[in-house]
Structure formats: C-alpha cells, structure tokens
Amino acid sequence: MFKILREDLKVVFEKDPAARNALEVILTYSGLHAIWSHRIAHWFWKKRLYFFARSLSQISRFFTGIEIHPGAKIGRHFFIDHGMGVVIGETCEIGDHVTLFQGVTLGGTGKEKGKRHPTIGNHVMISSGAKVLGSIMIGDHSKIGAGSVVLHDVPENSTVVGIPGKVVRQNGVKINNDDLNHDLPDPIADKLKQMEEEINRLKSELQSLKKEGREMYGDSNL
Image (tube, rainbow, N blue to C red; front, top):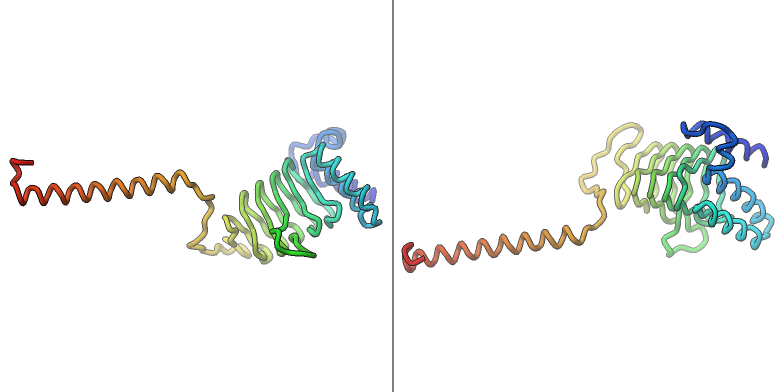
C-alpha cells in the first residue's frame, strides 16, 4: 500500500510541470488527495466494511470535489489533473498510467445491472469534460477528446472526439467521419435558421406578387 502511495506522489511530478516540491503536492493537490483516499476506501470495501468505505469516499468528495466510488478498481500511476467534477462509478476498472482531467465522468447509462461502468485500458488519457458511459472498453494507448461523449467500445491506439464520440485517428492514421458532430444542439441557432428560411419564403412570395401585378396593371400602377 505505501509503495503505491509513493508511486501516486511520484507520478504527479512526471505529468504536471507545475509541481515544484513534495510538500506542496502533498498539501495542495486535490487529485492526489482523492486517489489516496480511494486507495484506503477501496481496502475497506474489499473487506466488506461498506459503511466505512462509503463514509471515507463522501468525506473525500466534500473536500476535493472528486467522487470515486470505493468499489472502483484503479491501477497504478493514476493521475487526476485539476480534478474538480470527476466522477468514477462503482464497477469502473482503470488500468495503469491513466490520466483524467477535470469534469470527466466514467459512469453508467442507467440501463444496465452488474458491470455497468467503463473499463479503461493502460496509458489512456481522457480530456476535460469527457463522458464515458456504460459497460464499454477503452483500449490501451487511446485518447478521448475534451467534451466527447463515448457510448461504444474504443479500439487500442485510437483518438476519439465528438458527440457521440467517433474514432478520428487509429494507429496514427487519420479516419474520415463525414457525420462527425462536435457540437451540442443549439435551439437558438435552430430557431434563427427557421426564421431566416421563413423570411426568404416571404420575400419570394412578395416578388411573385409584384411580378403578377406588373403583368396585370403595368409598372406605372405599382
């Protein structure tokens, strides 16, 4: 346990250039606090001391803004950068050398029972605000782009972006996705587009009426 805790401290210096010294990291890095708390809470969870595990998890959530269910399985060299808003579900499994940024959700869709959260492979990076939902697999050495919503398995060595998430690069080769959509629905933009189409229709009808009037009465009467 203590060896793993030291590794968690070491990985901060490997992945965060802003880390200056061990004391500063130990006292001020909420991501590290959340990981250490989870290591202990998970130990209680495996011993079937569920109340103590959940209590420690909730205390950690209150102080760090990071919610990790004590049942989640997390590998070594795990790093949470600017972790506010990170949520990791009960049946989530995370491999080694994984990095999460703020706002990441590793959650369920609300439809499954049993294994209902993602399995994250080794050397995976999940960027800010990404949502990985359901009992799916994210392959080793893959990257999930910021704000993406991933609902299906991702192969190894892939880059995923968009809503819903689609593979845009695999094994270093770019993949074309004509239907790739990076944007959330915008009801205001949709309404403005409808109004523009209505104005154009009215203009067309007005021009038709003017043309009929000229043919019937002549230009001098219009």
